[in-house]
Image 1 (cartoon, helix red, strand yellow):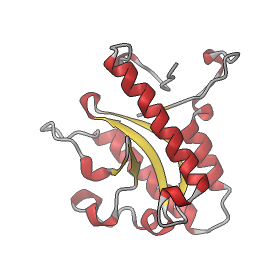
Image 2: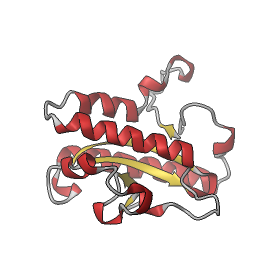
Image 3: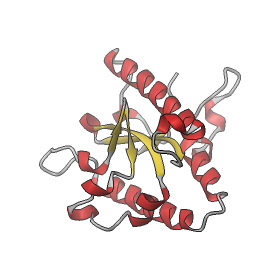
Image 4: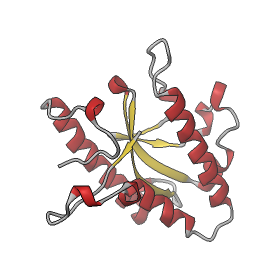
Length: 168
């Protein structure tokens, strides 16, 4: 599991840690939300991410665990829609579904890796109607474009990465 750090040209990549990723910054911002259900939703989300880290996004037989994600344009979001939460997911993400929590991500099934972006609370019917969440959605899609472009150019090898993913 990876996340992304956004660097300015003058930033030195070695001086940053996991706390500087857009995913961790998003979690910190969500924790400042005063609504009580958000703490439970974040606990569920982190437990779900731990399950993904333990089990991977592919089954032992090599099938993609697509039911774990909500497909949205070039990226996916977690948690998945309640209607797809069957089997091992049944009832595990109850608060996430009721709060409108969305975290954007990019499942890289061929490498059994997941890149976490940012997100927020969806307060409108569509992402496009929510300016704050749309900002996270647009950023995730732009980062996915960079990652996919580098992947196609063979300049991207996730198997050799440790820690955070840093797109250039």
